[in-house]
Length: 384
Figure 1 (cartoon, rainbow, N blue to C red):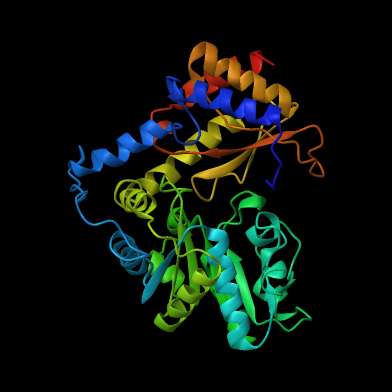
Figure 2: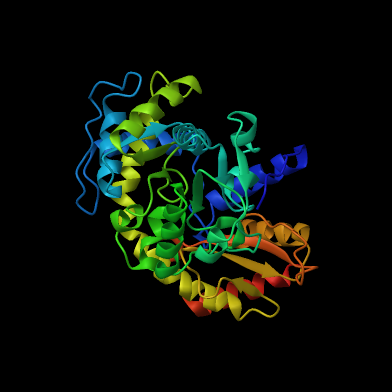
């Protein structure tokens, strides 16, 4: 779902959707939007133990100073979860990716990166790897899935690193089979390439592979994870890897302007997400199959992938995006039912006339039963 410049009308639509979804009675996709006051209240409440017994956070500790304190606590926590020796906090995943790819290019003496044309650096980072670091990309495949080991072995280009995005969001949050992932990593090793994992949504991928996070990351040399996408944080990311790699990444974070004076709000929210959201992700992934199956029964609907590989998937409907957006807003405003966020018309071959939205099954969706989804969808389509 590539970068879309925002217009005045788009901003008004976003404000209207924020208000309607925030006060809705039920929400099917994603998290309930929070105001600035909501966020501050949420953070300040962390000084008390949670209702499910999680310990309180020490809000009287000294704020971080250029990455120490609570930020360092977060880094060590992430390194342990991912089974890597160390990790470093970055204000954005884009910056973390640039640092990682640049380090591997300079270490290996090869500035060519093998990645998918739908990968985040190609679609959402304005090709910063090329503009800022002088790197080049080669595509082992253009098919809407991760490359196979055979495609990587037959690639007629010499590349110094392979970037794998798990899941591949733009293709529908797709994940490969575990055996295929292992073979792909092995093919990269055969060609002497370092492997970097774009794991922005790695947290929710472990169930698909039936492997632990350290077992997955053992296949790669470095991995980036996000704190705001799945864990509900404010912002920020972490890059994990070997100790010498992380020391070098800290230097590049400074050079790129990412060594901020204080980042405690983002770090505190990230720690809370690890404690409060991470343990529930398997439940979200399991319920996503229930939600997807109900949506697939809607006349004209297409769900992809079916069943979903994570707690996110695409829903396609044969109606204009503008009408779907308006119907969704009316349903939220008039009946308190917030189903989907925004719709796009990508014009995919074989899906002309269809619009697509991304569905994220999280805590708010767990109470929805299939018959309730069917009823809500009927009310939604009646407003077109």
